[in-house]
Image 1 (spheres, one colour):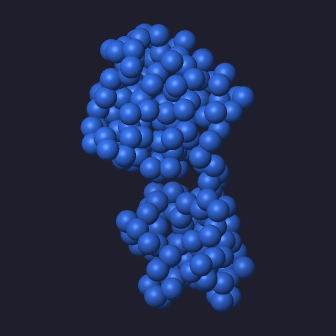
Image 2 (image 1 turned 90 degrees about the vertical axis):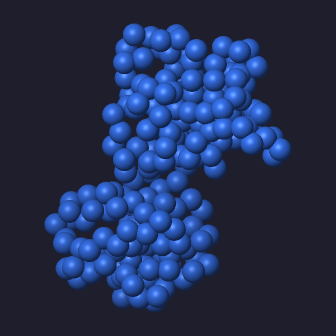
Length: 214
């Protein structure tokens, strides 16, 4: 049976809508009264797992799911051993460097060596500043990274930005975009290679749907 790992949060509704377009219905996950983390598709031919976005590639990499949907930001940070199959063209956001609007910085190149940068995306932040040949201290935070510059714990943050509203409401501005992120369809490499459960055909259908929008 085909198993699909679906992300909790912002990407879930569009992920379910996309899969419905190719005949896989996991809409029960959207029922506010539902507490199940594993459900069968209405046809009984596929199973859905509802997991944290950061865990989607883990389930796919270890083979508990043959397919998954997750943001490129998670893939970029975690570097899992999965097959990158389709850019699904939704969930647009960007990874940015941001500072207090009142700060004197106009570019990350203005930062002093060994200054502190707060981020949930430690690997992405480290990789970016290494590319600038600028040694910095990365302060790992699991949430509310905007408080880093506000409290003076860090000079800047590296974080995912969608509308920018949270930054504006906390007096922060973006200095630089590291990369843009969208939802991606990923697959278990071996399962895809041997076409388990017609993964290749399903991926092709999802690619066609993504091109016209969900």
